[in-house]
Image 1: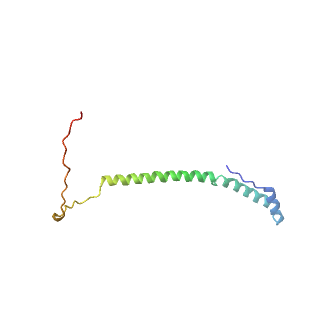
Image 2: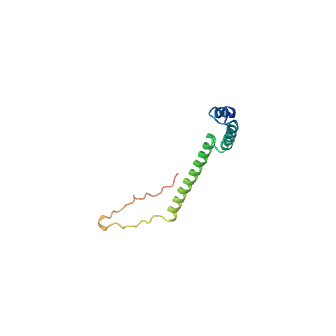
Image 3: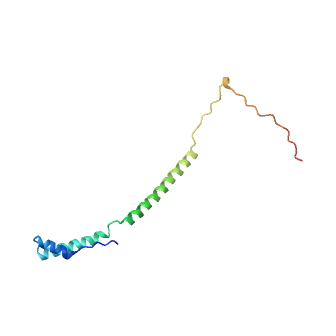
Length: 107
């Protein structure tokens, strides 16, 4: 918990120097002091922000991984259709395999 120092006595003296009564100055100092105390618990510290950023980063990594896996899964489920186009008769190439050599048993 972060604390903030607030000098109520100095604040009361400052208010009295500009024309506030002692009662008005005390009420104002008390109200302001209690507002500081309640709001300090709600303020985010650097530690809170660092923790939240790390959590956000982890959530983003998990979501990105899920999107990549979903994309790969969809590609496997619905592959892109490729149309086979037979070669034209004028551009036919003959593929020859090398002559086979007889297997000689090892000695």
